[in-house]
Length: 640
Image 1 (tube, one colour):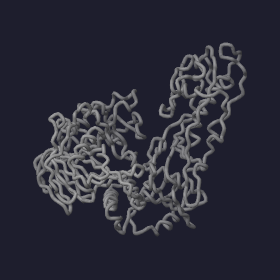
Image 2 (cartoon, rainbow, N blue to C red):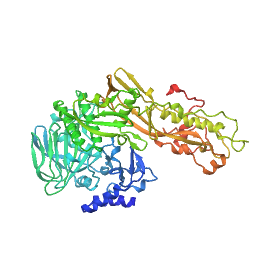
Image 3 (cartoon, rainbow, N blue to C red):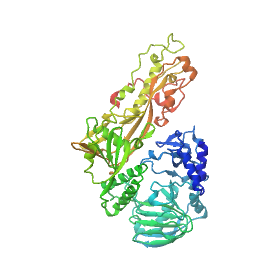
Image 4 (cartoon, helix red, strand yellow):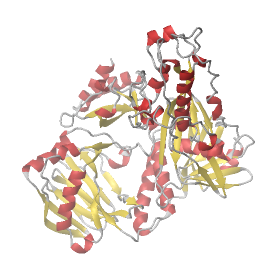
């Protein structure tokens, strides 16, 4: 049934199916509750749509677990390396909203000899060109539409049509060379490159317009890069009323195939579908190096709110229009300063396991209580902003949420005071996960031992301690842990200095090295089992700003300030324990439970040259890492 659901999805996507047939299919999907097949980029993925997994994405097939890879469809004959996966849109966050496809393979080996000719000045710093290129290059660009990788955008209500986003450094380089010879030279001062991330947009006659908007400029403070001009490359030609309208500039009713329009990003613009055919165009931008560029924290705050509201619109669609307004205000602010917004702003009131808070994506408000610490407020803010997984469920899906539109923020303290609750993210002593092993009894192996006890065998104890070191290196630095459905925090990783909360992280410690031998009755790794699996969330974030009043805390996330790069990573880390099974049962099973449970992404890789060639070692990166360092290294709490 799952294969049939998968194949019908793509069959219905390729043709105009009767509405009744589509409705029946959707009803079947809504009644299908299946487990995820794998996890990718923090998202649970399925090879067919289900009641949860309704958003289709395309990924490099090699990135999917080999055990289930063949179940995922390869719907694009022209891009067979891409597999279709279905994800739960409730799990998306600003890191995973967009699905950027690697398509350099499509242009590998091509000459890509582009030339812009017949320049026409449409308005001040707005130009149209004809793109002249060999037939083979033209065919490669036309194949983009035939890939059939389109998906409805998250902001479909305001932009119309379908699109997909792809990355091609080769295409960007070719366009950059054409721009460098065709644009007026004074306008190219500081020109660096064409952004290699492209949007491929498709509109059919009758689709909604791409509503009037400004493109949000690309900005990289570390490199002093900022975009100044939007590039629209039309792969098809046609007529519309208008096909492209630059507010205060020019309106184009007719556009020829392979026309390129380049205009200053201060222009608001709008486009309608062609009357008589498919409209397909690429969008990217020209990137400049500007040593004078600065960053306004208020713009960053508004952009943070826009991203947050986009994610929340999965739960509350009415927030999409607010997110769209925020994006447009951010885009305009880069040229004209930040204009005042509407008096009434959207807020989201959330309740997570007895704790109420109000958020807008930049500001997070909590009521004070005897049970709620400032570290706990920061932890909930992190979980919410990044939409972290708690067990198998996204944080935002675990919250009871209500949208509130209000004037100002004065109402929030009293609103939360009436709902003051207890603790949802208690502190936890991580050392409880790592009990000390028993003393060795001196027996050399099961074959020579009179009464073999795995818990007291020196080589098993040694491997157990190495496994603990490996696990501690990933768990001890983590500020937040998910133990099943419970969330706990390490308060020592939340340091308050002045009006800032610093969230501490750390790097993995190197495990130790030991030389050993073994005899019959299994191998040491067969005795190391999994006691528990702990999900850990590591964060690299700027300080969280806060103010404190008599009744509550007001936290502010300034993620887009200065040159901060915001990252977070989640992983599941198995905690080792020594099994009680006897040597003969272990030898017969041949299993290595803890080693098999370790996520390969946690393994540094080792050198491949262990200090002693253990006969039972399989030469895997995990074994190399466990046995790749100096002997007699003891675990020291100060290391963490």
